[in-house]
Length: 230
Figure (cartoon, rainbow, N blue to C red):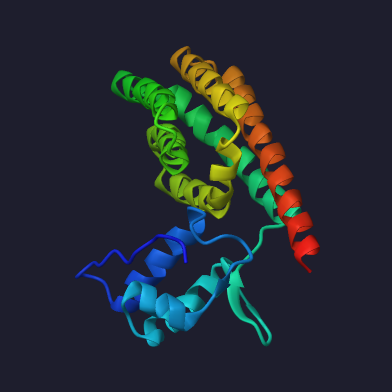
């Protein structure tokens, strides 16, 4: 069992606490695609009964993060190349809108926040903590989303991003990829600072395309490994 624990919140029902804990573990890659989810083991690990675990599994299944396999039970859902391409096709279109809004609306204070987020990502690289590095990358894009001043757009983009979050750690394992992200973050910052919508959108598109290619490699490796194990 991977090292994650329940994060109790006195204001939430236990089933929601368990759901949030398992969801976070899946999205962060602490529970791997294809990994079996045993109710008893999870209940013992989280210090709860099986009932909230079972209820959480149902909600995770509805979100597409868990699948139920006949005679095997629940397991973390795998993401296919089609899933990934569908998500990123929508994300690219919405990122373009978000960047266009950011170029028009980002304040000097938010520009400074964006620059600090870019520098924080670079500094976090030295720590060697890939989960923390993925969170630093998310924080950079969050500044752009928030500055677009469209709450609905932010919600949809965050949801799309979360659907592939669990592959980001794999994506960040490559040193060349990490160095490229540092460069792209700075280029996006400069383009938004100069209110250059076209350049910012082009850099963002390549940023996402590089991610897509790296994640597809990871998906194909996982598929091959599953076939070998069979």
